Length: 406
Image (tube, rainbow, N blue to C red; front, side, top):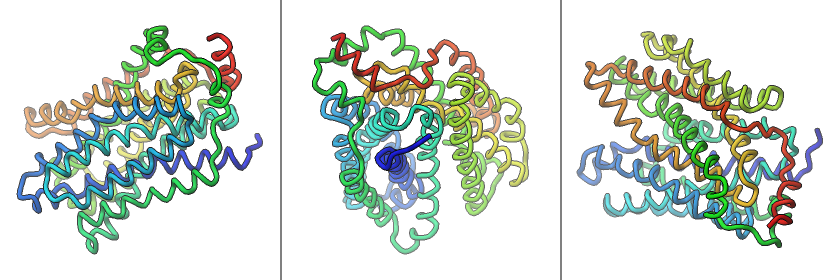
């Protein structure tokens, strides 16, 4: 399989775009207590900013996706990265909590745009046989960003404080220069550029069954990831009373598992198909549940977390390529990102749901996490075979037909 330099550059840019987007998001997670102390409020009041960031992501997927479908993937990606970097920097200058919350909501719009635009540009550009591996690599950007944020917090926070953490978050803006110098436009978009195309609403109406199905599938997927990640540090601290250092290294171990899972099952999907790869990866969660949620020592829990994230991010690793392959050509920059982020919005009740369940059962976070993770693993395994298998579709050729048919 031969790669051109341009194809490699596109892959690097899209991976770093999502990694640094996640990095900027997770920097906030580490400094909630410090922000609450400075603004003389409680942590839940500051956590509203994270909720709003997640809630605004579908709007970003819609806005930046439409821009990318109309004006091209490459310029939209540059504007998108510049926006989330600037909003991260401005967050560090917040004079009060309300300003910070507004800036984090706007950051959510920018964050929501990157995944759809970056994945469309990449999947339309790389060789079809490489899509599975590249899909796993793109999805590995999220745990890579979490890892990077953990390292920056551990090394630099003591010197720069919470505002300095946000100032460091402007660094992704440098990626715009790389994209401008080295990344070409998607050949599939260029094939459609000069032709009349149906609008978003008409295309969604023509594909309404696919749209509803994809949103339901991505809701289950977001329950799978958030249900195994968001309350996991709380589970380790509240239920097992581990000190921050132990929580930190277990978090690092689970993120390494996530990266391995995404790369492995993304690559496997090239051989066994997208649906079978997702089916197998999701069901690995079931035998891992007892070790992950109900063991006691840090080594056993870290092993369970490692294996659980191989399952969760293994299934997720196939999603960028699968959504791009089943997407209508004329809205490929909008559709995958929009259904992903709408699923994210619908699954945003997860943390409240799990926390309430745990509190009513004597702070048993392990049980609450196991119920959610086990249920959605089975739901995903059942749902995925209702999807179409379009492994290896020629996106440029398909895009030409769209223009000709319109």
